[in-house]
Length: 478
Image 1 (tube, rainbow, N blue to C red):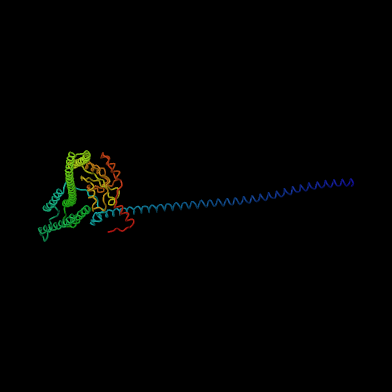
Image 2 (image 1 turned 180 degrees about the vertical axis):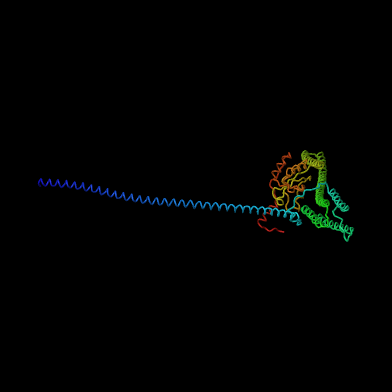
């Protein structure tokens, strides 16, 4: 290769480098031109977006303005509707209040009418009366039926006196018939007699049937008859006097209380007869016991005398020892007879000595119902057996039998302690109490200073056997 060629190669290389530089420059210019074009494109796009943004913003403002206007219009309409609704609600409330007041007034009027009608109603059906009667509070509290009878006669005499002096009814006697005042007076007197006779008949028929369950009903009936007859006589200016009505009501109350007092006296007489029978039985028991003791005393005295004679006649020591043993035995029996004799004499002389018994009848009265009574019988079980006669389906069980030198006081203390637990709060002679046996035992310990044995569980044999038979459905034999 020649030098010229080498120079030529160098030149070509230089040209090549230059060409590359120009190419790179051209590339740079092309790149810058593309970037400029992109820039202008972006700028135009941004300008378009700004225009769209401004347009949209304008639309939003217009929409907001429209929304605010429509909102304001709707608010105005809403306020108007609210005002209208409030006015309508106020009117409705006012109408409802007026109607409620009117209904309340009607209800009050109806209630008054109902009460008025109830007052006019006179219930005579016994079953209804027994279910609804109230406790009668006595208006007179006389000691005995004779006093009631005397006051009853006095009240009836006062009625007769009012009729005689013409004050049982008020009337005007200035009527004339056929221009005759005498005829007018006679007519008025006849009407007065008719009115009083009707009232008396109504009262008499009612009062004769008075009993504990219909006192208030008959009182209403008499008052209603009084009002009805006075209304009938109003046109003739005739009216039964309130004083006459008061006397008739007093007669009603006295008749009712007179019957109650008579029943109480009958009960007292029955109780007295029961006590007399008890005393007679006690006296009979005492006489029989005294006769038995006297017989035993004579028997053992004779035996003692006979043994003493035999001891004196005895010839051997063995015979004397046997007779001495028999003598001791007879002396012990004589001592026992003497003790029984003293006991009988004490019971005969001390009328307050006796037994307080605590008994139950589970089959008849249920659990925790006890009778607390007293008896002076020498054998108190006889009295308990009498109580369990045919009037109750089962026999009584004895839980305690307490002998006391003052049996009535102990019985009374127990009755007072359990007074509010009585089954019968009216007739206090019915000595049954709803109470537990533990409570009775505690109260006995507080009022009696000697030990007492209580049987806690009632045997109730026939009652328990009846339950078993009923449970097993075993037919009872005749």
